[in-house]
Image 1: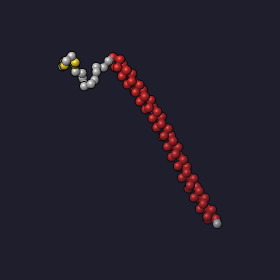
Image 2: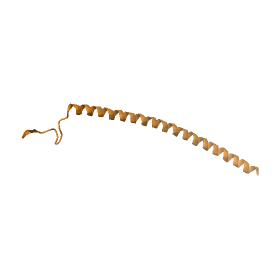
Image 3: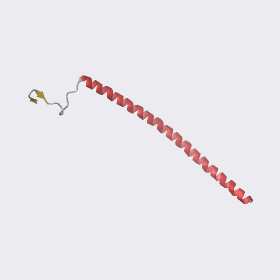
Image 4: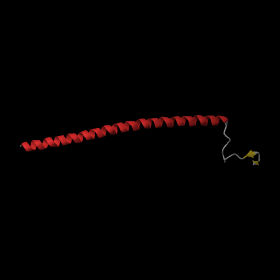
Amino acid sequence: MAFNGFFESAAWGESEPQPQDIVKDAIRKEQVLQEITAAQDDLRALLTRVHSVQADVDKLTSENATLQVYIDNLTMQMAKRK
């Protein structure tokens, strides 16, 4: 609809996208996608490290329990000798 020489755009206050704007938008979107992919890779690496550390903690917890049983048995044997 023409109104005093002006044409309505798709939305109020928006100008028609210029070709260079489209290229800039595409480049920016590509950069954002690359940043997201890099962040996902970093998170995968961190998750792998967390699982590794958790396995180490579980192993050490088990070893501590075994050592505690050993200490308790030694303590009882020492008490019986007195």
